[in-house]
Amino acid sequence: MPVSGRSGPIAGPANLFGGDKMTMAISEHEQVQQTITKFLSSHFRVNFGEVNEQTDLFQEGLIDSFGFVELVAFLEKTFSIHFDEKEFTTNSLNTVANIVATVKRKQSA
Image (cartoon, rainbow, N blue to C red; front, side):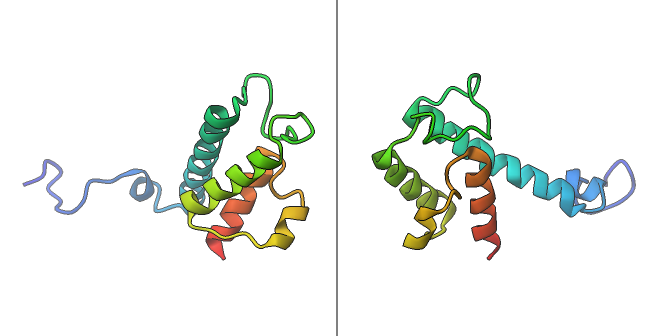
């Protein structure tokens, strides 16, 4: 018998805060951001001590056209999303912030 006299699952963060969707959404957002920054750091040697999530990765020369193809393939495979050709002409993948927002938007669609 549990110490509290109650049966059931142990309260985790979502249960402790009444299943607050905002708390859960922030952690999902952070997880997506960490996955993307880890990929950018390891594949393109992006140093996030020198750049931030608003830095234009293309204007700074951190990613070129071949890197863009690698990035898109990574995002599609990792997050089970798909990009249309028309999306490649927008700035939806030029900064970490835009990449994360695009991934989250596609996941919720």
